[in-house]
Length: 82
Image (cartoon, rainbow, N blue to C red; front, side, top):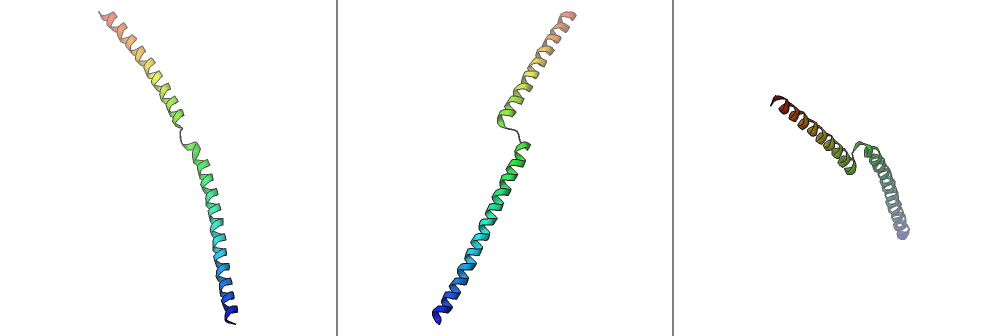
C-alpha cells in the first residue's frame, strides 16, 4: 500500500513537472516569434552603415561643388573691383 501511494505522488509530481516544461517551451517559442517580428519591423527604421557612407559622400561632394562655385564667384568679384 505504501508503494502505491508513493507511485501516485511521483506520478503527479512528474506530470506537473512535464506540464511546466511544456508551458515553458511554448512560451519560449512565442517569445522567439515576437523577437523575430520585432527585428523585421524595426529593420526599416534604421540606416545601414553603407547607406550612411553613401549619403555622406554625396553631401560632401555637393558641398565641394558649392565651395568651388563660391570661390569662383569671389574671384570674379575681386577682379571686378581691382
